[in-house]
Structure formats: structure tokens, C-alpha cells
Amino acid sequence: MRTLYHWLGKQVHAWYGTVLFSFLVFIEGFFVMPVSALLAFFSLENRDKAFKYAFIALLASAGGALMGYLIGMGLWKAGGKAFLAYVIHAGKFDELVHKLTEYQGWTTFVLALSPMPFSMLTISAGFMGLPLIPFLFFSLAARGLRFFTISGCIYMWGEQFHFYINEYFYWLVGTGIIGYILWKFVQ
Image 1 (cartoon, rainbow, N blue to C red):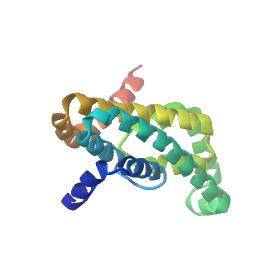
Image 2: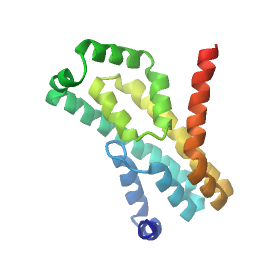
Image 3: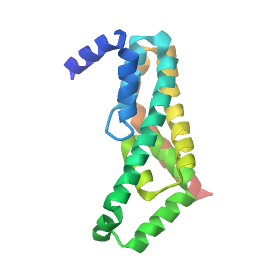
Image 4: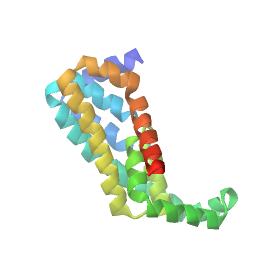
């Protein structure tokens, strides 16, 4: 892992560093990639460009989300319905798609903000044929919140924040999600 960090440290300052960063964020839409850690790393290496990296991550994430969605649609067309017949009853799948469509905004926002791999959300949304525009809107709202929060905190607090994000970020997100769910049940 130290070798990877050392290698990435050199790439940040290379002329193609930003292109490499945007490519790695883009492929997270359909492949597992630790984007928050990459963003934190690039922002720490060049704190003056932290918000630029957040913006680039947001744009690349939009492209990756669209690509993952299209892959999911392609999987559905390539035999998704036949595959599902072995896994779940067609009526249950239709019910699940209906519920996800009904609560698409919050579901997409929470999942895009959570530590779950983003590629699972993008490919699943395309596979289920969820409406594209709301999917992209809520995905990018959550991703923007996540990326700009990370970059903003690193810009302000630098190395101190890096320690806390590595230790506690997913616990904070998980606690927030659980707190929101509990709050909704109490109402």
C-alpha cells in the first residue's frame, strides 16, 4: 500500500496528474474505486487545488454514473429478465422497482453518500430502468456534498482532517443515515 501511495504522490505533481485523477473517479461509476481516499490524497498533496479536485471529481463522477447506468441497461437487455427468473419472482422484482422509483430521490441520495461502492448504485439503477434524470440529479447532489466537504475540510485543516477522515468518515455517514431513518420512524 505504501508503494501505491508513493506512486500516487508522484502522479499528483505530474503534468497528467489531473487527467489520471479524473479517469480514476470516472471508472468508479462502474468499477470499485476508493474515490474519497483519492480525493483526500490529491487534495492533501496540493491543498490550493482542493476545490478544483472536488469539481473535477464531480464532473468525472457524472460521466461514470452515466456509464454505469448504461452498463446496467445493457445487462438488462442482454438477458437480465431471464437471469432474474432464477433469482427472484418477477412480481417481487417489479414491486422492488416500483418502490425504488417512488422513493428514488432519498434512496439515490443516501446510497450515493454512503460508503457502498457507487458502481453498485449506478449499474443497479440502469438494470432496473430507474428514471435517468432524477438518478443523475440526486447522485450528483450527494456526490457533490461528499466531495466538497472532504476537499473543504482538507483545505481548512489539512493533515489533521486526513487522520479523522480515515478513522471516522464512514462511521459518521452511517450514524447520520441511521439517525435519519430513526427520525423518520419517530415522526
